[in-house]
Length: 412
Image (tube, rainbow, N blue to C red; front, side):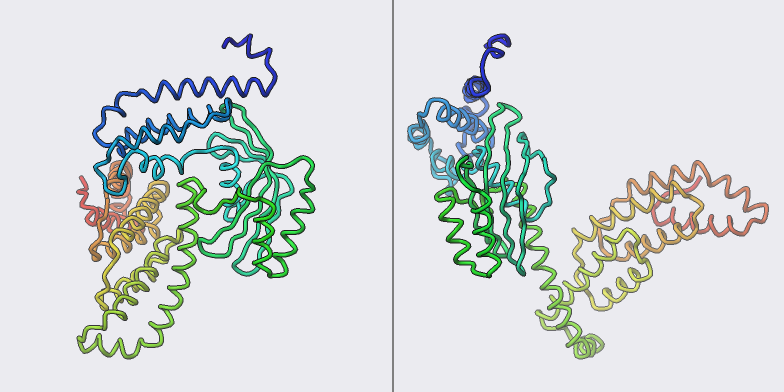
């Protein structure tokens, strides 16, 4: 369709025309040879092509009202999978493709559920959709949260748009109950919002859930309807809270039983496995906290490391290495900007010499480059001043060369 022809259409007709165009493009992508010549129906190439087909069928249903999915899945049943859990193409479709199909209600559900954990501005973008919220409310009672509101959602690609309203109840952990639907222009949303909110504030969870079910019917959504990236973010936030509770419990056990554990450690007796695991958890968590702090307490880090070695703690090498490399690189960047800061230089030295005593995987490449850059620019200048009797520069050279030895960089 030409641009001039598009100009003569109203918004609804333009949306329909753009849907048809996208459907045609997806239909062509369905014939991508790298997908259909693959030897596994659940492989990444094949599932990508099936996603194009799913999008084409979704648009076809929107425009024509014809549902092609059932017939398409019948065809996919004939493609057997080598992966037991996938069985055949139809099962693969249900496992890998169906959860990825997105419409405006699904986008609205994602927005509503994720807004419990994230404070969105009045207008925001989620992937290729623009969302504007109105009448949004969030209320909390302990661990339970309720969000209600309206939102205008528009696709930035095909310009499809809709007003939706939503209510999501978070009962704690991964338990969500939510309703999302297109807003009936005759409905009094303020009254619906008030009804759900009042029941929630009374602490009547059963009635709150009943109201959501009554108002939204079959359009119910939960955590599983979030896009994959957001699901991971939500789970991380939930797990972080759980880990913090575990950490507090473990620390109480550690402090309560510390005298007997100390006596056993002094006599060389191995700790019982449960107590040993608690010690590992506590020390690794404390070391991570220190390293994650931009204003790292280097003395505390050194003392805690020495104590951990006395207890023969099993260091979490993967996580500690990642955090330590990041913090070391950051400190070296500061040192490049302020190279004659003796306090900072000694801090880096102490941190690095301490880290070397722990069996971590340190990536010193960037730190070595920073050191070499500073060495070529300033070391001779510092030596000249030290030769003239400047004690401050003498101390700096000793500290700087110590750092070079730790980094295994030879000074010329």
